[in-house]
Amino acid sequence: MHTIKRTLTDLFVAELEALTGLDDVNPNVITASKPEFGDYQANGIMALAKRLGRNPRELGAELLTRLESAKCPLVARYELAGPGFINIHLSVEALRTRANIFLETPSSLIPATESPQTIVVDYSSPNLAKEMHVGHLRGTIIGDSIARVLERQGHRVIRQNHVGDWGTQFGMLITFMRESSAEADLALADLEGFYRAAKQRFDEDSEFATRARESVVKLQSGDPEYLEAWRSFIDTSLAHCQAVYDKLNVTLTMDDLKAESFYNPQLAGVVARLDAAGLLQESDGARCVFLDEFAGKDGDPLPVIIQKTDGGYLYATTDLAAVDYRCHVLNADRSLYVVDARQSLHFQQVFAVAAAAGFSDSRISLEHISYGTMMGSDGKPFKTRSGDVVKLVNLLDEAISRAYDLVSSKNPDIEEAQRQQIAQKVGIAAVKYADLSKNRTSDYLFDWSSMLSFEGNTAPYLMYAYARIASLLAKQGHNTQQKSLIPAGASMAPEEMALLLKSLQLAETIEAVAQDCFPNTLCTYLYELAGTFMRFYEACPIQSADEMTRSQRLSLCVLASEALKQGLNLLGIETLERM
Ligand code: ARG
Image (cartoon, rainbow, N blue to C red; front, top):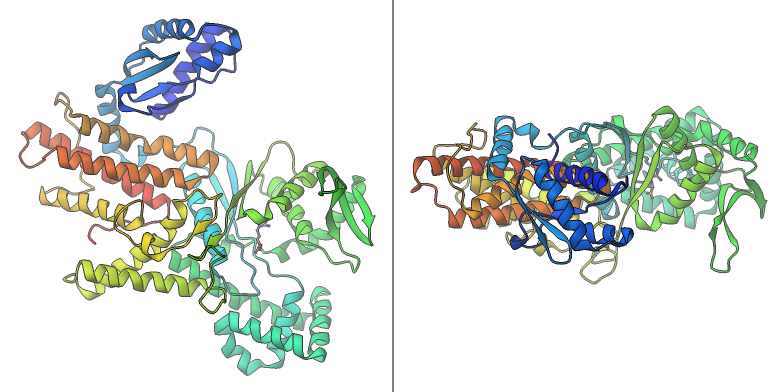
């Protein structure tokens, strides 16, 4: 079944096309901005009238006549308003029918896509030389939510964890590891410290530095002994990452790894293909691609460096090989790169060079899903008090311990073991939700007290709203999984109607997230849903209502809880029946 918004949009498009003879109209159907405008409104008529040189009210009136005779079962009535808006009031009957379908089969609340695609989602992708730190948090969380949403719609999602596991740093690290094995084994438990120690040695001991540089060459030429040391370092580092993913309830596994080193065998071919396409130029000894669309401040074209003077390849070279792989081996229709906004020029260049050289074709959509930096309360990139980067594991442990204190003070009589379980879920959810609920393109201010608050647009608030519905259903001898339908014929208070409609709108919210990859749209929706529920709960008593009304209200509770739960799950947040 199409979403309400899609059904209305399709109807308006069909009628407008028949009316105007055009084939590219946009009725711009949105949810009504005010309750007096009905449930939805079409805002596109004015622009269309302008394009046709017609009076918008007149065009609107003609459209109205057609809409009325089309008799869409979803619509109770239309109104022509203002300079040419059309307000849409939905039929309570039709909404009830829809709701009952979903109550019968909750999974259908989010419809499967009619055109399933193969979609690559490249996210998290840390550099393995160091331990994951807060800088990796946003991409990991946002990417995971996008992957969940697309998968839920029935797309074939291929997660790609494009970890940085190659380059000069690894020469330094394995040399350090080989030369100080006993300490190194110990120190690897703290990768961050290990990196710092190796770096210090590298800076202070020039002979060590020379051996480190030589080891890079040995590594690159495939020396088995060096490769083995490298492999063991990488495996340790990956185990650290996996522990973070598991703690975060992020769906990435070892199977999703497609490390930079995977593309090594392709890199010489990348250079050859660029050369054959006539795109390579020498500049200061390096081999570069210059494209007209990328100019520096002085107007001179900016190079995309492909191969350095010493023969080494660059980050962009690997990404070109990855575009080729995703396009021609994985056959992806879309490839999403959930990466920090600071890499936006890099991706524009890679996408442009890839298109020019045929690493991609017009069928694939390459999209940089960028996000801003995580800031501390001082407005600077988030650091520890001593100015070090914050390790992700430590941050997550702190979130869990803060949540534990919170849960203990709110609910001291919950059993200890259960309290810990709740804290685990709430703490992680709070960190994730705080991030997901902000528009990803802006920088984001990390703040413990607001993310752990039970007021406002936070995970604790939404999880609590869910638990509250579960407990009020339990009081009525009902539960969130119970099948119960809305009986025909009972009248519906405005608060009931609002809750019904809002719950059904999960479907179109998910469609929007799948399209534009802004999970904050889903957060806003869930926050509004919880608010709509609270208003319903205050206005519509359940216990004292007559049997038919009571049953309608219980069904609405089940429907709303289902929408809340499914929505939170797509953000990677688990709900609790009690907290
Ligand atoms: N490892 C890179 C970094 O830490 C991110 C990789 C993103 N993905 C990509 N295909 N370039 O900055």
